[in-house]
Image (cartoon, rainbow, N blue to C red; front, side, top):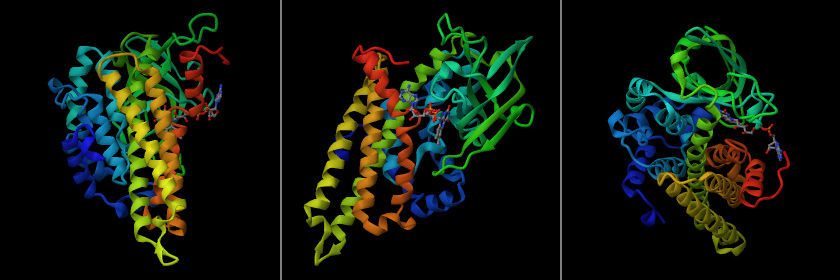
Length: 385
Ligand SMILES: Cc1cc2nc3c(=O)[nH]c(=O)nc-3n(C[C@H](O)[C@H](O)[C@H](O)COP(=O)(O)OP(=O)(O)OC[C@H]3O[C@@H](n4cnc5c(N)ncnc54)[C@H](O)[C@@H]3O)c2cc1C
């Protein structure tokens, strides 16, 4: 399978790096809900987190498909890229919409790992997916913005130096364009913590370093506004296509991890005097998972190619993420079933990956919202909200 995939050298190098962080490393972190600092450091030093940063800022200047290969291989190896994947797509907001001064200031440091841009603050407790109803407000006062409000599910906030924050700079206009009036600020977490920003970890069913944020008169320099005031929603949407395609690659990696493990186990495990994999009742779900993951992978490749060519890819990115997340979830369920009782044993890593891959049907965007997008934007059906 791997021989025909794009970026074989990258895949090989990432696999070798991941081999230094085997199951016991991830299990121990999972138990403690601890951050994989050494793994992120190794990825940063090897340059894998800066593949999308242009050469002139110290990155590799590669296209999205290279980043997809990195994340897919991380996940296929049994590791998890969630601790650091945001650096790849949040950086794009700065790269595409930041001023020259902002790019010169931050991108080279992000490329070396001196500065971590891992946090992306959009979701709020009351508005949920209805992003235009966010309430976190940044009021311009002289040369600063004063931010008040709260965010939920903001992952890696405790392990990031910078955060791309979406907030309102003018109230929602129900009669006008509801997405106007939102802005993107680059928040320096090192200065913000304890001076208007409080971070509260949220323990979840997977090890994801996610948090709740509270802003109480947090002051952010006005020079940290990205792009134009009021046009932030467009910048965030723009980055979301990359995010969805990258996350879809993680799902493909997860799916392949489950298929690799299930096929190996089905060959080795002998019950009733023969390998369980000799039974078609065991074989077929593994084969079906392979078919589904392969099909989803083609959709991810297609979406990545459109993105790299600078073509519109919103629907393709969404559809790729949905198909890949459903394929990985089917593969996860199949893998547990193939392992019988051992699918539940911590030391097999299946139950951990099972919990981890469930996330992708909810975040970064839930399946229903993708179906709604396809129904109304692709198929021209009437809007329901
Ligand atoms: C572990 C984790 C990490 C996350 N990390 C980040 C992060 O770093 N930054 C960030 O900003 N956010 C993050 N999120 C938030 C994530 O993007 C949201 O949870 C996700 O988009 C769903 O939004 P919600 O939880 O508010 O669900 P809601 O919007 O409350 O929706 C709940 C359910 O109702 C369905 N639903 C809602 N409205 C409709 C409708 N009109 N029609 C049909 N179905 C509907 C949804 O599909 C969903 O299944 C994270 C979430 C998790 C769990």
